[in-house]
Image 1 (cartoon, rainbow, N blue to C red):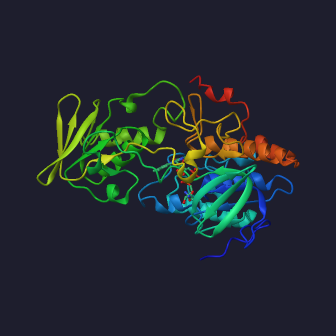
Image 2 (image 1 turned 45 degrees about the horizontal axis):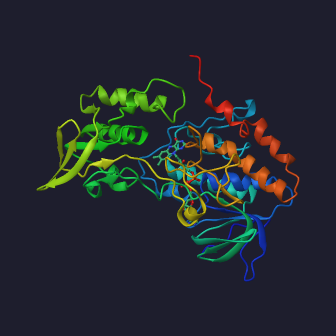
Image 3 (image 1 turned 60 degrees about the vertical axis):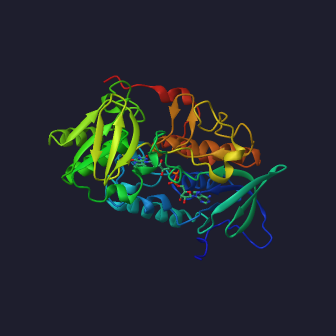
Length: 383
Ligand SMILES: Cc1cc2nc3c(=O)[nH]c(=O)nc-3n(C[C@H](O)[C@H](O)[C@H](O)COP(=O)(O)OP(=O)(O)OC[C@H]3O[C@@H](n4cnc5c(N)ncnc54)[C@H](O)[C@@H]3O)c2cc1C
């Protein structure tokens, strides 16, 4: 096993000390929250990661890239959209605007090294229990105790498939299999970002693609929030794919998938049946992925974790959620530039409870990386 990254406040010994805060997951949410915790004076903390730093990005199929561009606007208060610390920029360190998963993992590793974030890798957290005011966390590399816990395990391990008969025959868009070269007809179920992304990929490879989605998200024109309408780059790619004549967008729900000899048949709600030689691709997104802390969160009516105004579990005080599963009312924090708004807020709540000086976190606000008042997030662009 690789040794932990040398840091100021190392963790996990044979008789573990009680940390002020423990973060689970070393993706952008976990590393970003840890960086904010590092700005709180004298706070003891660490990060446990089941694989390597940025593991999800290392697992991305090689063809996938970010859809939010990176750009070094930091000096003028427009911090790189994909940065997890106000003084960093993936565009600067990698010289790239639309990053691959491997490039983003490299950026995260460089941030961890530069700021000496104490991350322990190969340390999958298997169970968590609350003992009085503390959490006992059982990891593959031993137990850890902490007064506050931040779940930043991401959603990639929780792919959602359509709730229809035969869903098990589909390949999820997160899997490399869905991205390998497909010939002939390809059917994609789900027409939001990931569906349009993989459809454009296969059109570029020469296939004929049908995307089906009863909500026809490709048509969404209202609102400026990219969680509800296609990003500009996706729309440009969509238009280019449509112009080939080999992409069809169908406003209908898939109601079932079955085999017919060597072929697959996707039945639609309007009665049409789509045949393909390749397994249909389910671009149906991800669930909340709470893993070993699922029992410590209550669920909202729509299934997402119920949080208080500090992104803390309403069921388990001291347990915070950082990352794309954060929801407040109708707001979705599913991009890095959104969920990073909460790193410094969570760190401040944890720091103040521990009686520490949190004033250094104001730097996050100056850099446009701290939002306490969520009412401002609904602002629309005038034009
Ligand atoms: C194809 C694709 C394109 C995307 N494009 C963009 C984009 O352009 N812009 C954008 O902002 N977002 C984009 N996203 C979303 C973005 O990737 C996710 O929101 C982001 O990865 C979430 O970060 P995270 O740190 O919460 O989770 P992750 O990056 O998934 O990190 C979670 C970490 O936790 C670890 N972990 C999980 N369980 C455990 C456990 N039990 N014990 C220990 N460690 C554990 C995992 O190994 C992983 O390293 C995209 C997503 C996909 C799939």
